[in-house]
Length: 277
Ligand SMILES: Nc1nc2c(ncn2[C@@H]2O[C@H](COP(=O)(O)OP(=O)(O)OP(=O)(O)O)[C@@H](O)[C@H]2O)c(=O)[nH]1
Image (spheres, rainbow, N blue to C red):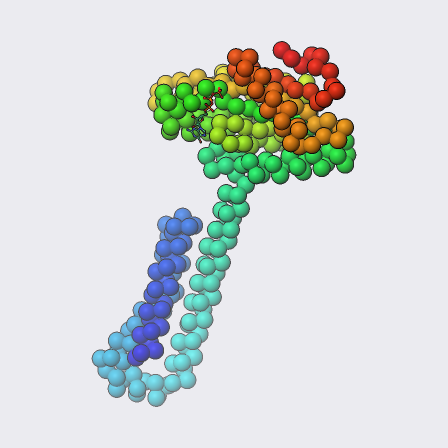
């Protein structure tokens, strides 16, 4: 009776935990179905324990009559139920790992690459460019007067505006381009193969799209604009930090010149001709 009771309690508590886990982590509303074998096992052992308590003589007689079969059937059933449940545990763990990988790479609010993933993409591109001489450019983009959006429309509208900006930017990218949220209301774009003039054109297109597509928020149109700075990787021993600093300096100039505009910062020793608007 004690063994059956303990097994019943074990089966039922594990079944309860697993179905709760399956529903919460895997969003399976029918998660309870996956726990059925253990639930059934718990009930069977529970009934055996109850019968042993109420009528010990019957159980003793049953076990004595057919003990080998009894024990084999119980163990067989237990093993099938355990295999089933271990499969479920593996599914739950796999799901957790996938979620973890995703959240370590993507920004939770916008769904764009996060800063760490963007930094890795930039480093990878820099290595390729050092090896193969492949040109590339970066853009630093920053929403204008974003504090006012938060202050006037509320923080929820600000969040929604960042998602909106992320969607607009991502929609303009080629397959090989990468766009990430650098932090706050700032975004970075990696443009493999692009010259500074081409990067400037892309930034101008992004700026126009953002201006043309205001955020719809509670039946109102909230105007959004962004400023952009562009810089190009220089073959003459450039560093990623220097490349980003140039894009940042160009962005700073765009802000200082009135916002909603694009500026480009050539590498040292490169002419500015045709780049400054
Ligand atoms: N809603 C929301 N606001 C954010 C988030 N991250 C940063 N911000 C806000 O973005 C605003 C940035 O303000 P500032 O740095 O003063 O820049 P700005 O108002 O855009 O002005 P300029 O950049 O000079 O045009 C701050 O109010 C931050 O709180 C976020 O995830 N959600």
